Image 1 (cartoon, rainbow, N blue to C red):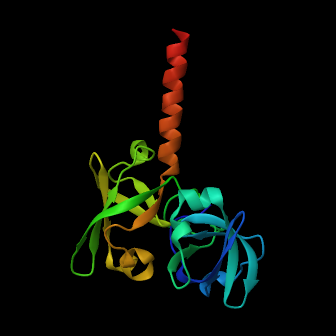
Image 2 (cartoon, rainbow, N blue to C red):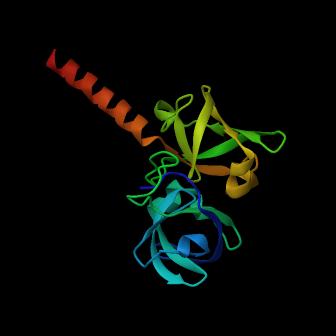
Image 3 (cartoon, rainbow, N blue to C red):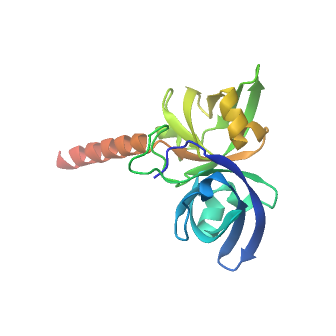
Amino acid sequence: MFTGIVEEVGRVRSRHDRHAGVRLEIEAATVLDDLAIGSSIAVDGVCLTVVELDQSGFAADVVRETLERSTLSRRRPGDAVNLERPLRADGRFGGHIVQGHVDAKVPVLGITRGDGDATLEVGLTPAIAPFVLEKGSVALDGVSLTVAAVEADRFRIALIPHTLAVTTLGLREVGDELNVEADYVAKVVVNLGARTLDAAGADR
């Protein structure tokens, strides 16, 4: 489990296309501290498994299902990526529950830049619409954020200067796609509510 608090921005060192998917090698520093072969790590919000490790980075395999569901299919050498290790049992819970299971890719529809801050307008797909609520949580490229407003086909996120400086969201432009993971708690509540209503209807 992750919390959406990005620890560092790494960089894709190399990409190796394989029959079963892609192997990405990522340059990193901070997250290598207690990383080991077999460790989980979130790369742009996608939970991957470390399969190789050296003093300057790690490698992870990305299967076709993940490539289809996430923007990792577009990552090339030199690209920046958000990195986060899983939450330790004795760690601070700084963001919200993030599983690293991307729900959809959503486009950046608009960016309004202010005095160091910015507002993102992001596309709202049917797959995530029931779980995106004003003042609720959402993860974009692995970054824990609060939804500022929701409209029929989009939602807005306010980004503070710190977030723009320490994550890749400060690099995004209109037309770019982001990995989105809706709030796990919202998913549980909505799905349990739907099942309860279905069960009540069946008993009538």
